[in-house]
Length: 142
Length: 114
Image (cartoon, rainbow over all chains, first blue to last red; front, side, top):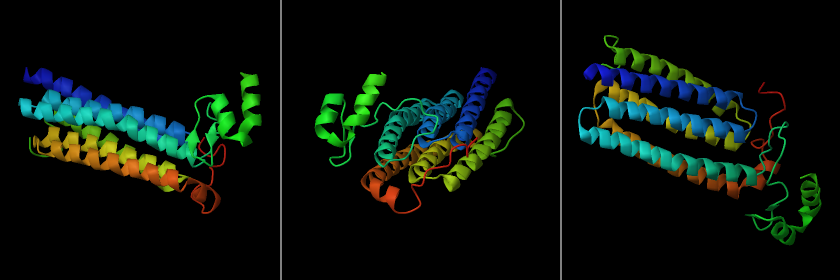
């Protein structure tokens, strides 16, 4: 049995390390901050989570398994929230998207004065009057 | 198994290979931390650092069998999450200022990353 858990834990560790390396390559190669965040958050979380699963498989006592699973649950709970906040902050602070971006669903819907994102075009038109032209063009194109 | 690098068993070999891959990933992320054209890129790289540090601690727990380090991993995840949240608040609050003033928010040239 020890050999089986060793092999399973080793495979978890190897696959996790591969995913973390893929996330790092994505961090370096992706063209703008949003795609970089996409690579880092999803692939990096999966990689570290697989390593923690490897710890849980390899561990002998239930206390260590519970700690590893608690760390995994914490990682899975906080990483999406952090990525969401970072993406929102980057968009609001005006970090440009990649030049090859096909469609920006939030374009013209951010009220710069009140610092608020509007969900619907009508609300956006009421609150941010200066962006009305781009919204009309966008809905016509859709 | 108390040493970090132990090539006697299959698990020891995989942990050693994973350590090498993680070191490469740390170098690549550090390049992005240095080059990142905006403050957001750098904060994303720091967040990635903390996630990779949790993976490194997991590797150390497997290699040495000292389960105490898992609590360090949990605490590190908490601190890194709070740091990222407050960096995001900072970017959001100072966004326009950074875009117009200093060189932090200068956009990357197209085709530079390819």
